[in-house]
Image 1 (cartoon, rainbow, N blue to C red):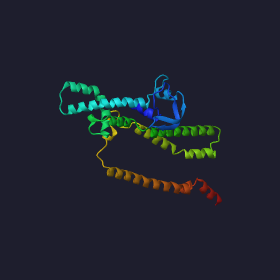
Image 2: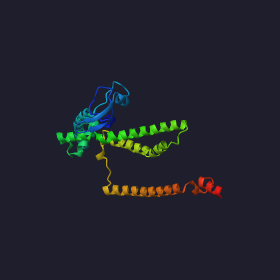
Image 3: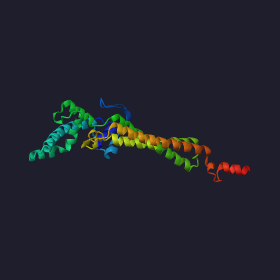
Image 4: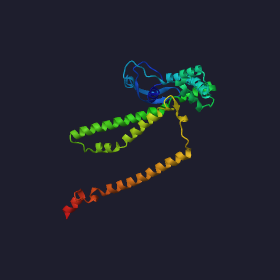
Length: 271
């Protein structure tokens, strides 16, 4: 699964001679399996992904071909499993199932397209194979947004350290940049979460249990109501928090009446 996720994140359509280049930016096209206007840095992906210069990064086209075979093997595993569930005690059936059982999960992908897994058509097998890899475009861009957020934060941090060391940390542009940077950790975190969860699709348990077969018995209404409850409650908390923050920002620290802040001292001096 990790090979598939890595290939999808990098829009690595075909296995190339190692070490693979890293695509900084481009426009991935999953239909034609190519990345338009790609800007690449030689060697970097190979070094990051494999920590070597001679190990290839498996491309999605090769992964797809392998998955087609595993789906066909999974059909055999599913058929043998049905025989065992029906009460077969045949040792040969058990031995054959043990031979193909590692591909059972791929056979179960066909249940998205037909209930008769054993009688699946070539078209259904192809649909299941295409479904066995995640959509590339969302992974490609969310990963790069995450990395960009990290580099921006690192850059501001470096500038702040330099400015502090030369006693110029009160520059307006740096203070503003630090303020505007505040959402970036959350954006990076959400993008990383998306890459982790979306990148493992279509599996809940890698290569064993497809996500669409692991859903709960909750209805759509149950989910919408619970989400609405959470969203409503936290929206109320957000409104209260913003109201209090803005109120006391406008009042300033002098509203604490400690006798040691600017306006209190100024008032005391004038008296």
